Image (cartoon, rainbow, N blue to C red; front, top):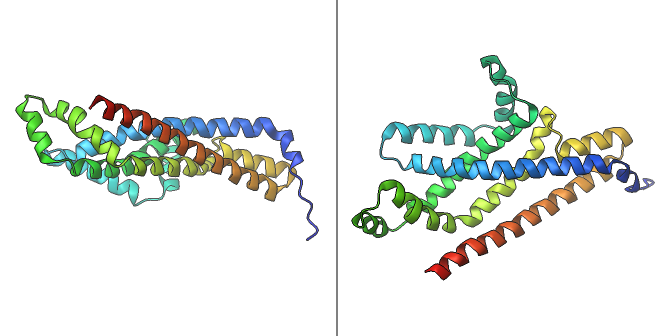
Length: 224
């Protein structure tokens, strides 16, 4: 093989790499927070006794889980302007990631909720707690703890899936890689480095979530 690897030239585009990484981090943070909130609301709606609310939440989950993420992204960015809703590339990418993650977390959190012992809920009702108080204080915390590892995995999947938003010119990491390789034609080096950065980001996310989980759940055990 005559090919001479040349990683040094990639340093000439370090500002592009850093900007792309920072955009990916921002997208991931907003998608994780927004998706988690949406997932909690979705899980509550899926278990709601009123059938119309339950049906709307079910339809949302089924539509998102059975359509490709890139189609959802294109619909939000290219389709919504026809209805008078215009979004920037970053806004569209962020909303698409939140909606996508929210649907998956809805089912994950719902699975944790559904195994809550009925006796705990009945005891809370006996103490006079409202349905909202029971959900927030009694049902939700242990439900999230039960499915925490699945939530972490899904958030990492969405971070990796953020590469798709480069298709609408969101200047994240994959967009940066495409930009660099189009300038220096070092395709192998550019995407090799990009893969390494995604791997590092996924590892860091898992470590941060593990620390957060230890902090939250160990505090609860101490309180008990």
